[in-house]
Length: 249
Image (cartoon, rainbow, N blue to C red; front, side):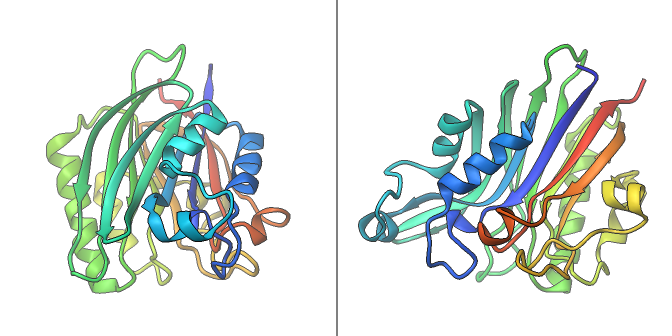
């Protein structure tokens, strides 16, 4: 295996953009066609008793387990936000050996509970694992600045600087004011490398905000794609993104 495919997707808790239709089957079928080696999902519903009681076909177990079973992937879940009838967070899945490490709490206010899920993936045939950080950041610029600094601190003090690294997720950074904070770490944004700038992913039906990103370090970038059109425009409120990556010798 010379290259791997990483996909990042905010699945909107498995619901359509206006929360009217349960779209888990459609999402899973579409994701299966991408054949991800690493799948980073945000807004994954770990439990929702209200929807379980009201929606036909709503799974009785967590969505990360549901996707893992449907796609034959191992899964790790990081719970970010809990409430009386359930909880949600990020999930990382892979057909390769997956080693869960830590769910980093980057919450900076009581209204938005956020996290970064740290896993290691061991692709078949690779001589070293990939560190995967699956992130979901806040809506406000000032909050994101604090969260970027928390991510930087974690990378600098907890991770091997020579390790292949993927930082992917929903950054909610529509203005791109905050993203430059990551530059001293040597992280490269895949769309900026291929196209010169990030590409829009939200809202899915007519995207004009570049909220979803994939950053890499110690990996080569071969391809970067925003998956648009049918069926993606009607599945979630975000579009998924993917990148084809290789090891740096």
